[in-house]
Amino acid sequence: MIRIILTIVFVILCIAMTVIVLMQEGKTSGLGAISGVAESYWGKNKGRSMEGNLEKFTKIAAILIFVLALVLNLKVI
Image (cartoon, rainbow, N blue to C red; front, side, top):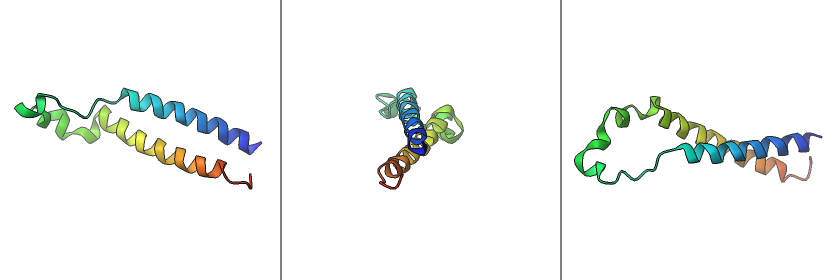
């Protein structure tokens, strides 16, 4: 029973991780880096912006997916 619940949580996490990664902006600045646009207000306060939050959620989801994958591969459950 617990294996089924963990599998469902794993699938939901994988879907959420896909959505979070797709919502993030690209890392290439293009020509904006040449003119210095990268050091704008949003670049300096990245940790408090939506982009910073998406990066945090990506890291948390990746860790949870890794741990759940390990747990689901154990033969004990």
